[in-house]
Image (cartoon, helix red, strand yellow):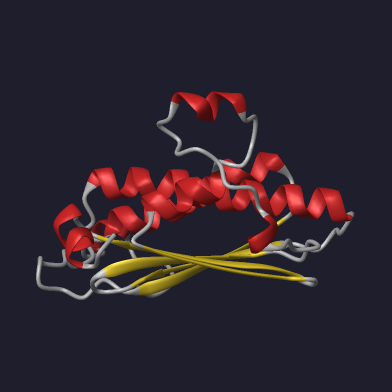
Length: 170
C-alpha cells in the first residue's frame, strides 16, 4: 500500500488454506524475572495456535512445559546472580513446534538430581520442588536438556496430535 492510500481500498490479506505450509521462527530475549514467564507462555502458545494441525490440548501441554522450563531458567539466573537475558526460540514447522530455552545460569548435574515419585503418586506431595523437569518430559514429545557451567539449553518438541505423539513413542 502506498503512502496516503485510502485504507478502504486496501485488500484483505489472503486466507491460507489447510494445505498451506505454516513455518516460522519467533525469538524472545527476556530479563530473568518471573513476571516475563507469562509473556513467554503467551507468545509461544500464540505462535502454536497459528498452526492448523496443532490440537488445543497439545497447546496446553506446550504452555505448561514452556512455563516450567522458563521458570527454571529464571531461578537459575537468580541463584547465580547473572543479569544476562534468557533466550526463547519457537520454531513452527510443518508437523511440529520446537521451543528452545537457553539460560546463562550456573547449570546443574542431571545425574545428581534425586529420583522423585511420579507426579500422580500420593508420595509426590512430600516433595516441595523438582517436578518441572519430569513434567516437561511427560508433556513434550521430545525433551533434550544440556546443562553446563555456562548455562542450560532445553529443547522441547510438540507434535500436533496425540495420535502422532503415540507414533513417536511419547
